[in-house]
Image (cartoon, rainbow, N blue to C red; front, side):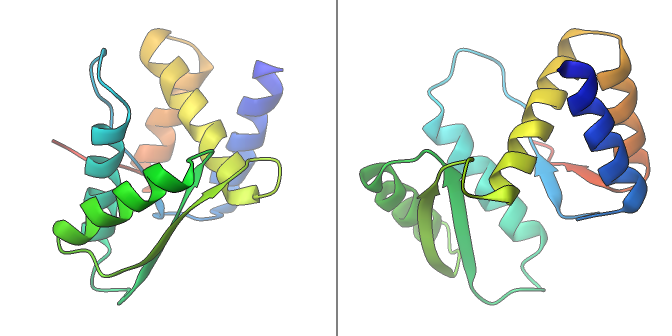
Length: 133
């Protein structure tokens, strides 16, 4: 299945679907997921702030309490935010795509194989945007 997932992402990059709209940031473990999530989402929004006046954020599997906390955290950082909402990857194609990229980036950081080559090519083409700390 790994090979098939990588082929799918190869096609996405080749066709330019969502090019320049996919952001990621990596963190050293162990960290609770919430603070890095808040940091990465705020940084991604800030990098595109001139293009949107209000943002909607969908997070895979986040519960209502954490969604409210993320909404409040982003608003404290000055993000004009419509809502943060939990979505399941089974019902949201963009969440599935984000999950695939997350898995590919995680694999690329741990191996020298095709995933690393794909991530490097996607970054060179401007498809993936790495958010720096």
